[in-house]
Image (tube, rainbow, N blue to C red; front, top):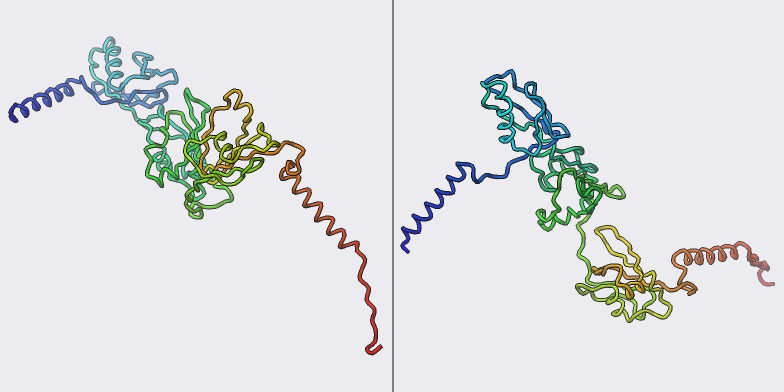
Length: 333
């Protein structure tokens, strides 16, 4: 096929596509009106009918001539057609109306905590998390972007996601942040200890080890491997000792500047497969305690009490021991 024929065919398809756009067969996604939106209605043929109305929680607006009419879920063009169709029955001189959304109250979210202007935010289209934070005046000097909480609303009300926005900024992966939806609440927490953002250093790279401590045959650091769970790390640490309490194993995992601790019943896991398989991360600490009765089974409280008791005994001895006596003798005697 000749180049001229290809260009000719391409021109035909482009023209066909443009004609579809012109006749409205292909349209871009339009905003659909929602409850609590504010609408401005303009009747150029009778300006006395002009009005600014709020969409009710039931999704309806009220006009003086035709009463209530459904608005929620419609585009402005669809609502215009419905208004003209209803009002022209009573006033045939009205054939056009322009509907404009002046306040997009339906698409709203809430942001609280360490931002300059917290509160309710409304949008025609809800933007990304970082954009919302910036449109709220940005963060304060005490904001902790490593623990931003997204409290879901709507159908997922009550669900909470903790997001490390600081890490996303550092890696340039802002597009991978969770999508914010209508009625969500964004909570920007305050840094602990009153430290400002400028006083916090960048997070250091984690070591490629997992620490195994307690009642295992070879405690200490174990080289980190991908997709390793607690049974596999227990095997790499030489297995448990005879006095190991496998029902109360714990995993201490780091989350930014903080840590979380999880208790695992390894005996139940071996028998039932529950809880779900936990994949360890680098710098996690896996703790296998001893069964009660061992010298080291008392934990931190026992050691504190023991050391405190020894200290008290030493002090008491120093106070009660008899004073040393000396005899003064004259020189030469």
